Figure 1 (cartoon, rainbow, N blue to C red):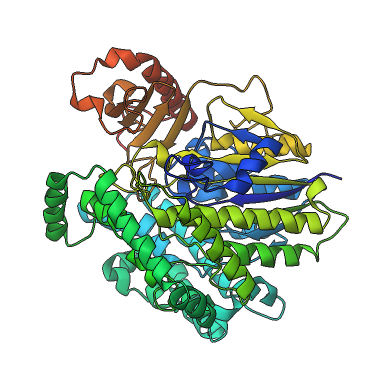
Figure 2: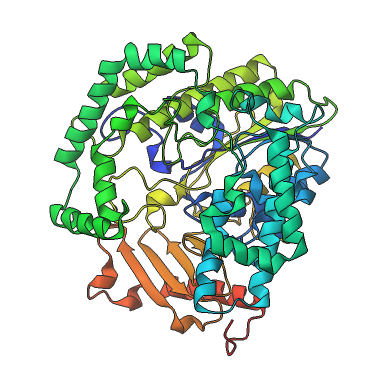
Length: 593
């Protein structure tokens, strides 16, 4: 029988946070040991700096912009991971986010879907519909635009109805978030959504324009969502964290401020300029926001209050604990795939199992954080909260392996630990922009593949499209011929550069928006922007960084007298990739889409 697979996608996991830090001890003592028993990469990169882009390449095993890009997520991809494991007889247990990316056909292939959050319509609106609303104000939408909007709304209604379809037969799907749904009115919300669906089907174009007109006042925004704060065990958290450890939290907040003020290079000229820009746009953004985030960790003191919880889903350990209980009910005649996508490292990070009833678990976690903090040296800069989250995630992975050993599953289970992208919220160094930047901390991701102790370090350059083919290779599954990813175990799959490609923040409309090509090797990081229907020479170099002399990527050489011919060899590789995409889409460069 094929090996079981546990696929951990740890959202926003920076590669450089693995191992001993220059300012203290290791954030990942367990992963440090696991590295010697695993396939481990040192130069793996995400194809996009945010979740939607990152997991599309990761879960399809293909370059991000192949097969229609990621406008409709995995639904237009052939042979994505759910398809492949289904066809190979795996029983699938999926605790995944964002589940609203999947069509009914895809969802039907998952044996055990386990919800870890409510349906997040705001993501659909922000990343798709609001883009077309703005576009519609300047130009009439084309039939192609409407087709894309309708496809997205079709998926939206399908996935949302899937979440609201509560019954005795489906109740097991909700057990992980039961505490937040105890008083949730599924029937009322399903009726409201069904009413909107009927209106949509009656006149799709009219419905779309009503969304544009009403924006956040539209009825879809008024469908009640669960409160993730209801998951918190407030009594236990208040006692162990906010009472017993209040001085520890205060000290952490002070040291975050003090060390960054001394060690982080803060330009007060840029700070003041950015402050006035923030006042003008009435929004916290840019360099000002980066400085504020680097100095203040005050939300340590209220992060786990019921009405202030920024997290949308249960803690990592709660998801591990629940999923391991669920797989005990599996069909033992089949191999299983368990997919987890926790958010504990994402933006508003989490560093505790805030939803546990176990005092022992919380005390162990707090003691682990205290031990790590004790080793912090005076040269620290960055985000202590992110470090705490990494320490917590590492502890949870150790607990997972301990449990698998106790269940006699470890020998016949491949455990994959990776990420969709890195993090731009660490603020070391301080950047002008979060998320939609091109810096290495936002792209370089870890990969550990544990397979009964087999060890191999891979130093060549790769992107996340190579992760799935490697899993298939290990499990004896034929690698689909239509994907561009290749197994890391293939000695012919070695490169000295990596290309990432995405559409920038917001709607990934390849017909109108420029593609951001990012290529990096040992010497340079280069960013090139152009539309798909342009000739390559019509594009622009946005940024170049000299990685030898400027490893922190603080000095964009395009603002200097840099000789572009020095990077022609990288531009030639991007030109080849752009040509591949042009052929794939058969775009006429004389037409204006």
